[in-house]
Length: 157
Image (cartoon, rainbow, N blue to C red; front, side, top):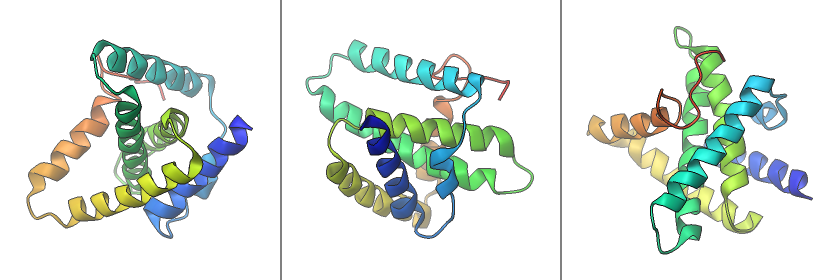
């Protein structure tokens, strides 16, 4: 049941956020041992960060983190398709973030789908924003998950 729910969520993220970009195979991508380890480490570190933050409502925090990871997954997925970038690393982190986002969302599939629909609007607004500072900050937030001394970093993807 959990696997089925994760696959449904993964498919929803791709369809809703990408609106036609074909990354659907990513939901069924086979992970290497290193990627699986990074996923486990990412989830563990997110849990630690959330719990040490003394937030009143952990559900809302996990929702926010989940949606941010889904957005980062989409961004890294797009970057992985561009030549001249770190394509394999971007693709690996896209898949890792995607699975983490699916696993962290604390509510049911329909709620996750609605949150992703809203997230799509946020990404479109961010992309259309003429002030590049917001775009750069969003990309930095995504990179924070994969940088040294941050959550889930590895040079050996």
